[in-house]
Image 1 (tube, rainbow, N blue to C red):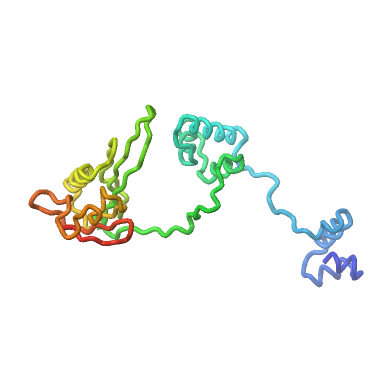
Image 2 (image 1 turned 135 degrees about the vertical axis):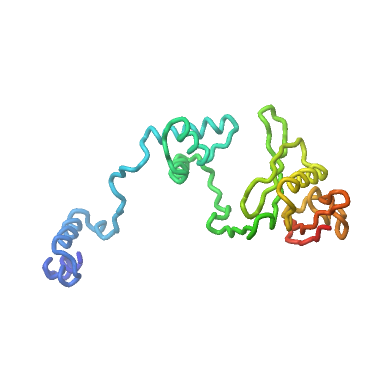
Length: 236
């Protein structure tokens, strides 16, 4: 439209009719070209000059301060935790995405370009309760520098924590005992899903084809054990 008026010599009214826009819009574009030159051809940002729903400067400062305080104390300092502190202690309701955006803008998030985006994850779950139980343990260092391992049995359908306990080190007998306790409270699962470590894996422990330690005395627990290598092993 600018070239039609400036280069081809058309009138603004003629150009507006040819391109199906108002004459006022053509007039503004021509005026912008005469004031800015070639820069008038570049697309302009449509971002609003103001955003009434944007977090205030005090809120942003509080988010940054909470991030630093929690990190210095060795506590979780992610967006969810910061949102909880804002809601519980400061009566501020800020979304997780907003907190994450401000943390990134202030350089408090380490870029991980090789990390897969969450959108690429394929989520799966069991169709029924007690169809599959997942088991794993997490290393955690206490405030006095003592190392602990947190053991969890989780129902893969409801995501319900069937059993959670902390130990200096999770061993095979501990895994067996916690499994039996969960079975006594919630029934026998059709299968279990664990990683390939020896404290879980029936093949690595030499239990393949024999009754697993999940069994209780003369009444074996009959289920199927799936390890992290996607190998099914019948539990007897």
